[in-house]
Length: 375
Ligand SMILES: Cc1cc2nc3c(=O)[nH]c(=O)nc-3n(C[C@H](O)[C@H](O)[C@H](O)COP(=O)(O)OP(=O)(O)OC[C@H]3O[C@@H](n4cnc5c(N)ncnc54)[C@H](O)[C@@H]3O)c2cc1C
Image (cartoon, rainbow, N blue to C red; front, side):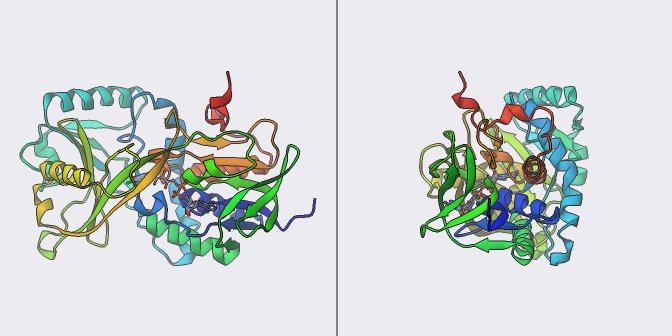
């Protein structure tokens, strides 16, 4: 088959750009198609690389992917150093606080699950927590430390990936409308102007919008889970406000504050399934109210940005990742929900392994994109 490019990637969010860069550095020619790269969920994300503190009930199976990806991060970022863009990776570790009895019980239950999975999370006294983070508020009643949960700045990482991909590959600023097929073979991507990019392999990585592409061999049951998130600047007199990511369960409400090297703090995030992509006043109120319990000085910061984006969720909150049986030269990489930044290096490695005909990692079948159509 005559092709224009080895690999076409639909979507230039953190996942699509990560896959494109991995394919480029393994020697493939790559074209990314996106009308507005890195402006989706990637633009909002806090960038926590936090397999332990982001572990949720019934999501233990994801640990194989999240731990693998966290371990891949340093090498993945090192491959981008030549771009000159610092992706803001910080080994900050994370402190988790609880407030009422139910918070303490939930965090203790979570710690039992974390321990069962050999994750390093230790309960520490509040005095010890305040020794690391003196600004912790007086209402906290329990503290845990997750020393291996770190962070990256997703906007800067996306900028580095975009620079790498446009320098060594091609970016087409256009929307894809679907995939082209010759029977069970996917032969390329159709663009909004009607033209077709012929590719040896096509990867669908355009987040929530993947569900709307024509010609896919299965339905992608994606749903938007909206997140309101704030960025605040710490005045000179209060710097550094935090040196760890500080998160908490405040009377049942999760909230986090992630300190950046540029003197700002990211404060997030709501989880809404109310169908509205407008910033929620109630959501912002709740975040500020709960953050003030974590770190009372939050009310002295300068509010510089409030925005909302949708996380691409799936019915089981796990990604749609891999091949679709009976369909060649097509990979799906979407549905990364709360973990897209964390999972970027592993998603990239898995996709490029598969398109090179190598086997995926053990357990990948759990994330088969057409799993909801079986039975
Ligand atoms: C408030 C918030 C906080 C978060 N915090 C974290 C965190 O701390 N850690 C973490 O790991 N994850 C976090 N996430 C989740 C993470 O942001 C997502 O999982 C991740 O961004 C998904 O990446 P993506 O590339 O699949 O999708 P997106 O970033 O949404 O990118 C999709 C891309 O596809 C493009 N596109 C759309 N339609 C088309 C089309 N027809 N043709 C071509 N291109 C198209 C869009 O322009 C966009 O660039 C957070 C998300 C939110 C909303």
